[in-house]
Amino acid sequence: MSSAARSSAVRLPSRFPVGTRFVIEGRGGHIHLRYLEFPDGRQVVLPTDAGSRPSSRRQRSRRSVARK
Image (cartoon, rainbow, N blue to C red; front, side, top):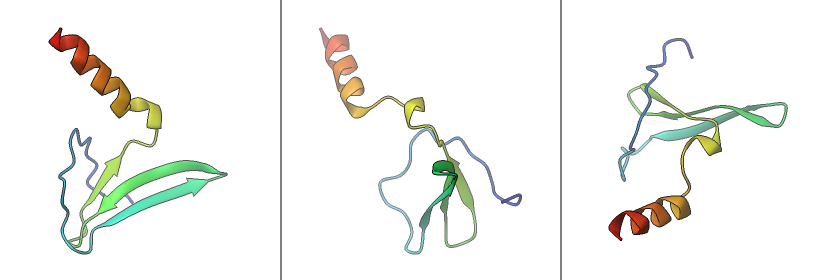
């Protein structure tokens, strides 16, 4: 994985090229690494901690509060 282009993607596109793979690597029952691998060999590392991004429920409640 040393040749991987590491990126902190804020938003992912809604569509990916044919052949794109979503890879999850685990060790000892825990997710160790998650990344997208594109057909041309590029890799985009994704966060492994599910708590690092707000859930859609939290996002919705924040939006409704902001509108008031």
